Image: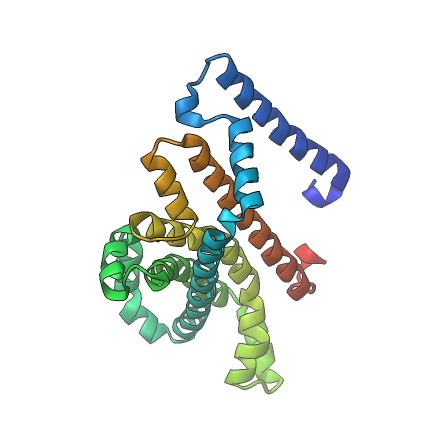
Length: 258
């Protein structure tokens, strides 16, 4: 039985119960001293911090910077991953040549590139964007390659018999067949784009939600730290939801979305 067979009301009721129950457990655990407030914060104080940020308008500038960095990282990284994944998947010779280099770069902890990007691009938004691009690119790239390689050879042969040339195969066979893989990678890429932006801000910036979190850590304000994490999490969920809507509209032909 899949999730589509359950009523939406029951699903949302269960999710709401989990969230509310988790917050209540958190609140009483701190209130009765089971967990120190200094380490995990207090839900009420976190809510007050969020209200203060949004009412005063303090958060909007910083959130706008982070969302801008995340959006460009996401778009550039996903686009490059789609293009190069498609090229190498359709050209096995080049794929064999570049395979060890791609695997080596993918295995590299990209966080260590943040200081290098800061030197190359400065402490502005572009150093954060480039870090995010390196995180998003490989997620999309490997999924596109796998999706193209798993296209049914029978479908390809039948298309050729019907007179499809290489460009038509790419447009009507390879890309549609790989789209489910692409969107699967995009769901993960959303989080990675935020990671790149926030880590870059954390290591050196004058604005952004990562900057707010760093400032809060400097004065041991765990409530503001947790509030920043909540803001980032909600934004990531909203963007992931938009990706899901786009996925359902573009993949109506797919059995899982019919």
